[in-house]
Length: 356
Image (cartoon, rainbow, N blue to C red):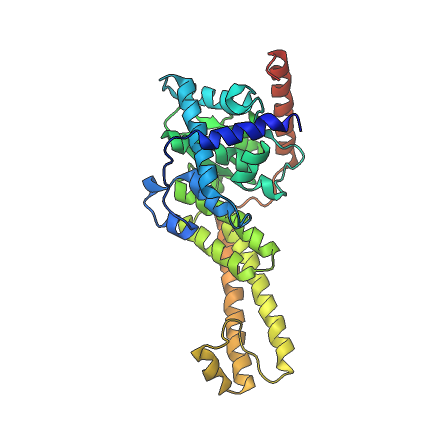
C-alpha cells in the first residue's frame, strides 16, 4: 500500500491539473475509423476500444491523464525538438522513477509475457497498474506521441508491436526495452518473418493510425469470441481487414471464427430438424420469418445449408489470404527469451546508475 500511495496521488493530481481539457472526436470505433487520418487521436481511440472490456470506463478522465502526461514531457524537454531528444525524454519520463511519474516507473509485466490478462490488453489497464505488455507499452508511447504531435507510428510484427519515429534513421523504438533501438533485421531474424510477409505489408510496415486501430480490433474480437458472441467477433474482424487488408492475423482469425460460426449453425440446424422447422438466428419477428413460416421445413433447411456453405467458403478465402500475406502463426520462444535478457541487462544498468 505504501508503494501504491504515490501512484494514486500522482494519477489524481494529473487528472485534475489540466486546466482545459481537449475534446477528442469519436465515441465509437466506427465513428473514429470514419474520421480523416489526421483527426484520429490514438490514445482516445484505444480508450474507446477498452470500453468493450470495461463498460464503466471513464474515457474523459483517462484522456485528461494522457493530456497531463504529454504536457509534462513537453515541459521537461524545455523546447528541445530533435527526435533523439524527444525519445530520450519520453523514455526517462516513462521508465525511470522520479517526481514526474510519482516515483513509480512503467515496466514490462514479466508475469504476463503473452498478454493473457485483461489489464495487459488495454491502455487503461497499463496506466492503472504501470505493468504492461508489448501491446500496451507501445500503445501508450503512440498515444503520448499523438498528443505531442510527433510522427511516431506503430509497427506490427508476429505477436509483437513496436514504434517507429518516421523520417529518423534508426527510428525503431522498443517500448519493452526501455524505449531502446532495435534494427529491422533483428525483428526479422528473431521472429522468423518471411520475405513475402515484409513485401505484403503484413509485418514491419509503418502503420497509419487506421491500420493500427484495425490491428487492435483483433483484441476486441477475441474478447467477444471468449464471451461466446461469435457474430460480434466476426463483425470486428471484418471491420479490421476492411481497414487494413494486409493484416494477416485479422484474416486468419476471421477464417477461424467464421468456420466456428458455420459449425455452430450446422449443429443448430441438425438439432432443429427433428422439430420440423429451423429458422436462422436474427429472423424472429422479421418479414423474412413470416415468409419462411410459409415454406416447408425441408426448403428452409436447404436454404440455410447454402448459408453455411457460404460461410465455409468465406472462411477458406480468408485463410488462404492470410497464408498469401505470409502469416507467422507462432512467436518463437527465442524472441521472448531475448526480450527477457534485454530487460535483465537494462535492470542491471539502471541499478548501477542508481535509478532503481
